Image (cartoon, rainbow, N blue to C red):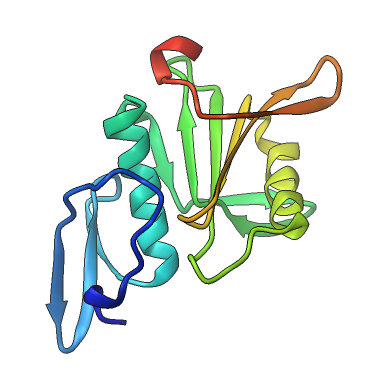
Length: 155
């Protein structure tokens, strides 16, 4: 997919490192410190990472991207996790390409990950729609938020 064809997303404008090699576009991930093929989902993932680091001030050293997690004896991959300074999972982010509609299936997916990871906050994004939730384990429910709190206000 050509970079010029990537959709404008509902995030601030960020400066990304993008290169073209053998007619394929790549984007640099500031967390994994590697180049990745620029797909629609990767475009959203990189916007979410930049949003967390540059807007919400999450320390880049406490962010993990695309790691394995064992859910119901199945190996799955989460998109983004942010940790608190004491190593507790603070936020799980599920990213979809901008061409994918956010549905109940997406919420079910992040809820399954959270059964294992026990995060306080959840974020789901296709770049055009962003959803933020706070999980209340005491009352076994969650509350939708208008925006994601800044890191310093929740740690």
